[in-house]
Amino acid sequence: MTLLWGITILWAFSFSLIGAYLSGQVDDYIAVTSRMLLALIIFLPFWRPIAWRKALVMMATGAIEIGLTYLFLYHSYHYLSVPELLLFTIFTPIYVSLFADLFARRWPKQLWAPAILAVAGAAMIRWTDLSENYWKGFALIQAANACFAFGQVWYRHQSQHNPLPHRTRFAWFFMGATLITGSAMLALADWHKLPVTPLQQGVLLWLGVVTSGLGYLGWSYGSTKVNAQQLAVMNNMLIPAGILVNVVFWQGQIHDWPRLALGCVCMLLALWLCRQPTTTTAPQRTK
Image (tube, rainbow, N blue to C red):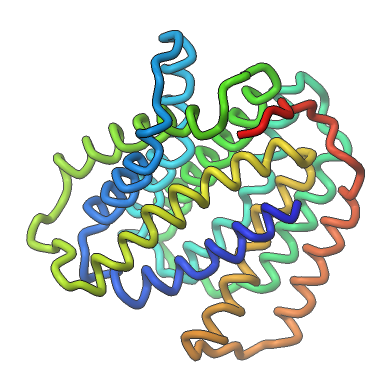
């Protein structure tokens, strides 16, 4: 759980970095593919040939969990305001719980209460008025949420019987993510919006190597060490963390501190409800 908290804090900074230095200045598809390519580069030294079925599974996991997630996410910006987009990401814990139940072949029971409580807490923090024409954007962001949740649970499920070190798996993981985002970039990118300034390049380097590369490695490894309830709830802890980082480091404004506090209490309560030890037996090999 400590590792997931650390990655949550790390990812909380990325929203402000993207909003301040990349959004509207660097093409979305170029930015996303750059991040995936940089992450792939740091894992290439750990690449080694594996059975083609395992290779395809890991590439598919990366393509879904990161590649498709980002493609749906960035496309949803054409239909949603930023507050709407953030609001609609609160459903991710529900998808995590759903896929965990499907992979475990069980009827949903205890998993749903913490996930729904986490969604309620995030909704208190991020609730805002909705525009009239948001259904298409809503569908896109739910597709992003579902892809991210499915990838997390699928990776966690694979870890029960995959002896490969995480660093080797992630070489294949980011190959899949780079392949799908790179294809989208070639088809849809605006090549007039390249990262031309040292600041933009530095931010992309940080986001690619640290936030995407090391961040997703840490999150995926951490997901194998907690139960599905805890993983579901932790998906929404990024919302209050991102708000606090924006306030402290980028002078953002919070107009309703009581609502923020109440939402955080709900999510912490959700974590308390799912405090029982993990039921997943993951490989204990040193990575």
